Structures are given as C-alpha cells and as structure tokens.
Length: 424
Image 1: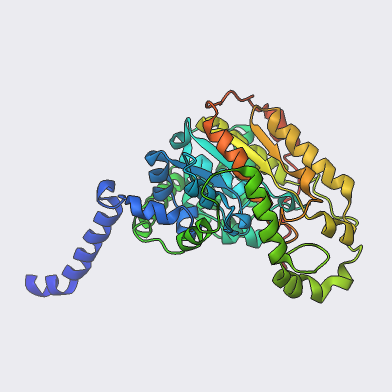
Image 2: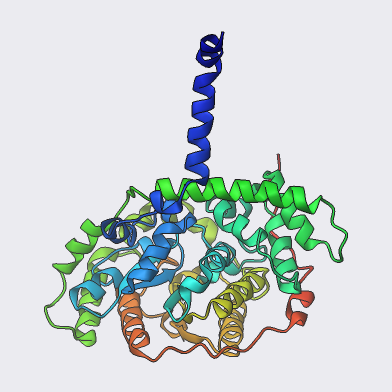
C-alpha cells in the first residue's frame, strides 16, 4: 500500500521539493554571473539584461562599466559610438547600454530604484530624447513592451513611508495596462496610493503574495542571466578599424563628417539614404507643414524625469543628463512649433541643473549636418561630441550634492494625464 502511494504521489512530492529548493535555495547557487557574460551584456541591450538585476549589479561591482541609460539611439553603433571610441582609446570606462526602443524615464526610474545602493558613488549617464516628452508621455504599448515586473515588485514591496513621491509613482504605474493585468502588483500599488491606515486590500496577505511573486522573479532573473544573446561586439570591433590610432577629437569630427556624407546621399534632410527612401519618401508630401501643434513642453514625462532624478539622489550616483538635437531640416519641413521645442530644452535644463545634476545639451547643433542619422537618432558627429563629454565626466571628481525635491512638486503634478488608452 505504501509503495502504491509513493508511486502515485512520490514524483509530485519530489517535484514540489525541487521547486521549493529552486525557489528558496541559497542565492549563491543560482545568481553567479561570469565576467564574459557581463562583457557580452554591455552592448546587447537584451531584454533580460534591461529588465533584470543580476547582470547589472555584477557590472557595477566590476567597477569599469559606465551605465548609459537611454533608448533606441544606443543601438546605432557606428565607429564613433561610445562603445567603440572608449575601447579604441582606453578611456578608462566601458559603456554598459541600458535601453531599448521605447524605454523612457519611468522604466529607468524602476531600474535605478531597484539597483539602489549598488549605484552609490558610481558615474552614470542618461541620454534623453525630446520625443519622449509628448503630451501623453510614454505610450501604453512602449511601457508594456519594456516593463520589468522584477523592478516593479521591488518598488511596491519597499518598507518605507508613503510619501507624495511614492504615491505619485504608484499612480503612474497603475495607469498602464501591463500593471493593471497583474492583480497582486495592482493591489500592492493601490495600497501605496491609499492615504491613511485603512487600505483597500488586506496588507498582510497582499504583501505575502507579493513577496512570493518577487522571489519567483528573482530566481527567473538568476537563471536567465546565465546566457545572453545579442551582443554588438562584432560591430564594435568593426568600428575600431575605421578610427585613427591616436585620439584627436577634431580629426574624429572630420572623419565623422566624411562618413556621414557618404551615408546620407542626396536627400534634402541629410539622413541615411535608406531611411529616407523607406520612411520619409512615401509620406513626404503629406508631412509638409503637418506638425504645427507638435511640442514637447507639457508632458507627464517631466514628472517621470523627476522620479528618475530622485531615485539617483537616493542611490548616491553621480549623473550627467545629455540632451540630443532633432534634425533641423526636418523640423522646418514638417512645420514643428519651434517655441515649444525651445521650451523643452529650457525646461529640462532648468529641472536638471537646479537640483545639482550635470547637464549637457546638443541643441545648438540641430542645423549642423551629420549629428543624426535620421530625424531623431544620434550618429557620427553627435557621438563624437558625446565621447568628449563622457571622457571628461568620468575623469571628474564624484559629485552627489543634490537638492531635495519638495513634496509640493508631486502634489502639484498629481493630476497630469497619463498614456492614451488602447481602444479595444
């Protein structure tokens, strides 16, 4: 009889025991990340890297990596990309690219918040994009595609005071469908959002459910961090061959002009010819003077930027924010509101510098050729400027003397609009 019972239930018990061991066993058995994996991950922009923690933490502990938060521009690896130039001339740092198409301030906030003290005293760069700051901020699909449940649960489970900042972050997260579809995470965030001791969901049960889910996500990150695909090392090594042996930024800029000119062709916007023929030419006539109302100076993205800056303040990181240009010839053609664009640069500069962060803008180069490879993405001469800025930034003494954010800031922006909802 006992043998029959064991034959029936034994495999289930063994499987359950293995599950518990994998889930709650010593982290040291699962979380080790090799240096070679970190090296591959630095240029991969792989989803598991961006949405995980193990590899990012290992990169920070190794010491030589410079995290660069951004979005799709980071994937434009030409000979002047920071990953190439820093390797060619041994600039004392190796970029670790933390961004994908659609990653904006709110995703980066969750990542930085999750890394926390791992960033203390570390140099970090953030490349903003003006187009993030549209009237609705990050779109629901973009946020969902880059959403990290691991980072979100870490935020939601923090045992800390529910400040206006924390409640604002919870409200922003709750405006996205990917968060609403996770009942446990949704309940945790709704408890944060509720003022006073009375909460909409049982706190003990909700927290326990959240901790179990977080443990599962941690172990998933441990296992996925063993093998990473998508490294751009081949493209980096190819770029090395195009560069002169001695570092001279004037010479690099001249070379960038020459390569940019060869790649852009005869189109009127000085963008890559392939991009022009595929993306612009089919809609060119329709786009003329079609964007008179387009502006980037009123957006919930400014609140998300503040969340990101406050996460860096708490972590104690030394951060530089970099603002790229937009293609001036394209702006003229589509009739974009130039005052709105000027306001964007002025507003971000004031918000960043007034709190003690380093800031660099390429706004003045929007009418110069070969700073961008298309209408918005950095390339060639744009990267050369950023290479110089990053080299100086890394050598400068660590600076983390930031101005605290008043609670009134988050109370004031509490009712700003969120992303447009997808019509079903």
